[in-house]
Length: 272
Ligand code: HPA
Image 1 (cartoon, helix red, strand yellow):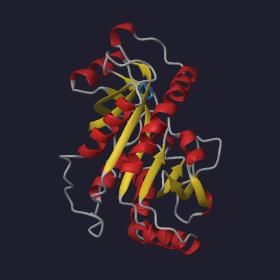
Image 2 (cartoon, rainbow, N blue to C red):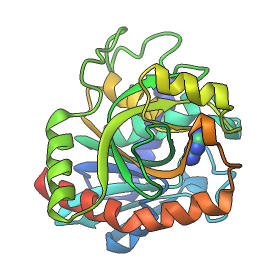
Image 3 (cartoon, rainbow, N blue to C red):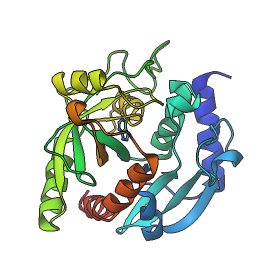
Image 4 (cartoon, rainbow, N blue to C red):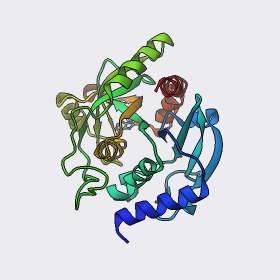
């Protein structure tokens, strides 16, 4: 079966199970875990029951698609995403985004955890992604172009919709949520960066660095899907004062950032 046929098969399978056309897709990365509690779920489908879907390896819980209402809008949320460092190729990492588009989503919302390279950032601040630099090792669009989804050379002049960035900044201000906008640098991981790499990332214009999001955004933009993405700054990456990364501290910071991130996403979804 070709990749396109797999996307169609998975989409048909879901449409047969679930009578629901979502307006928005949400990838519940780090920082948005609690958003599931705000979704009035109508249907849930576990990834392991979906044909062709990759299955999460790192999550202790099972990955699933949640269809329901959030802030009065119809959404489909991915609880559990796929990372290149887990061993999936970029076509597998981005497969769900293709399917969500076929299910009808008109915008994509994404969250992640990222290291703060901009030294003006503090732990547990938020950063709305305004632009990105792709340093990952594989591009999800490599190979024959999927003409039915988009063109060979997708435009990247506005990878993250400016209108939604401005709306989100306004929402953050209203709620006094510490929030910046900046450039996200995507790497493959799974190791964190060296001091020399952090210095490099800062010098090329990065404000934050992380191991997800860019492949999903590239595929969304290939399909002309407007994107909003936001990072929880979980650790500071100052090459001259670098502390040893501790995963427990990173998770603690992500947890701290969760409330603000949830508030922004909910208000933004209500507005769009
Ligand atoms: N690099 C550094 N710090 C981080 C990352 C990363 O990829 N993700 C979360 N904190």
